Length: 111
Image (cartoon, rainbow, N blue to C red; front, side, top):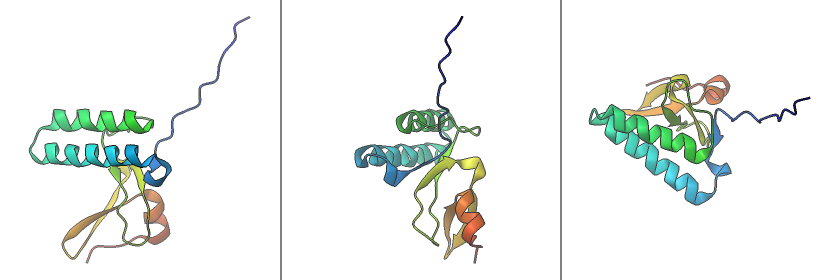
């Protein structure tokens, strides 16, 4: 008779305010560094930074390999999630990101 342990599945998203403030700051720094590397076309470095961020916060690696955070102007949402699920809009020339929940509850459209 084999004994099987049941592993708890990792979440696919996390809210920054649920993290230790030091970890949340590290996550934000990793995501900003990844954006900077991507802007400089250093895609391998950006992918490695996203992988580090995923490990840091203990969520399931996103299918796209890229994380983003909700910056919705309609609420104070701090969700970090798979960038492939992001809904983007612009306001006064600035791009904002909505997670799926924000987009469903109060979708904002570009100017």
